[in-house]
Structure formats: structure tokens, C-alpha cells
Length: 245
Image 1: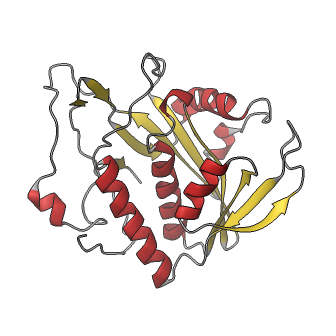
Image 2 (image 1 turned 60 degrees about the vertical axis):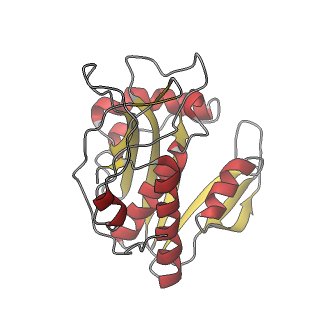
């Protein structure tokens, strides 16, 4: 595995790349950016799909002006129709460059189930929210449109929000997850979250318990090293993706 530098520099430049075709199946180009006011209706749709009837609806418009909150959306990048659809291979220079000093570009393998794609008028396919609370960064919500779950988008959102917490100077990242949501728990455990407690009857729809999970201090060498390796593995598996800070 190539060396990865763990300096948490921020990047804003992203590259425009064509869609990829694999065995006749369309692969989506996906990128992340900060939530904008024009995204709110689409994000509310995803929130309702993922969490209803539990949630009343997050006041995203107010959250845009909250300096103690950070929201990212995952969006589908539509390439011009005239662009040829080809399989992309990373250039040699990109293979050797630092994870933090190169721009991430596209995801390979983000495929919806056959016949299931997001609304053609909607390109927001997931989102994540974070609150800064003292020395802690608390993940409030993370959700992906149902047809596109299981293809690395949720993991990408988690990477972006952990990076935001590190850049903000938070000591640890915390969250709650349903006791029955073993898939999400395994993903969080993969990124260094450990069970810290239980909130009894936390979810109002069925009184299910919530598992409280938290990372070790994120500025330690051990956490940075593990986090860098996990991002490298993500890039190898899913190809590069664009994160606009």
C-alpha cells in the first residue's frame, strides 16, 4: 500500500470526469459539498424516507446559519451527453500522490438496483449533519436515498464529517444508532467508534434503544493513522470521489 500523509489540509478543487460503464451498467459520479438552501427540499425528502415517522423534520434553513453545525450533501454529477463513456484508470502520478494533497474525483461501483434510480429532477442522494458541542462533534443524521444504499455513499459521508470534526479541532466524534441497526454499527466500528452507553427508549416510533458510540481522541497518531488507511482503502475500492470543503 502506498504511503499516506496524515495532515488534515482542506481542499476545494474538484475534477469533472465522465460517467463510467462497467459490463453495460451505469456507474454514478458522486461528489460531496456543503449544504445549500436550494438543497433543502431534496434533503427533507431523504430525511422523511430514512427516518419517518420518527422525525418532525430538521430545520435545515436555520441550521445553515448555525456556526456550530456542519452539513454535507452527496450529489450525482451528470456528465455532458457528448462525453464518451469509458472506464477510467488513475494516472500514474495520481497513484503516487498523497491522499490529502491530491483531489479525489469519482466513485466506481455506486450502482442502484435495476429499475431503481433517484428522481431524474433530483441529484441530491444523501446527506450528513454534525453539531459541535464543546470538545465533541456529534453526528446528528446520516442518510442515503434507499435505491443507492450499500454502495459506499454513507461511508463517504462519514469520512467527510469526521474530517470536518478533525479540522474544527474537536476531540472526539459521537453519535447514536439504533440497537437493531447492525450494518451501521459495523461501519462505525470500522472507523474507530466504540460503544459508550445505551439510551433506553430513545426512538419515539417504537421506543427502541439507541447505542451511543464515540471515537478515541481524533488527534492522536493512532487515530490519524487508522483513518488515513481507511480512506486509502476506500479510494482503492470505490475509486476517487470529490469532497468540496
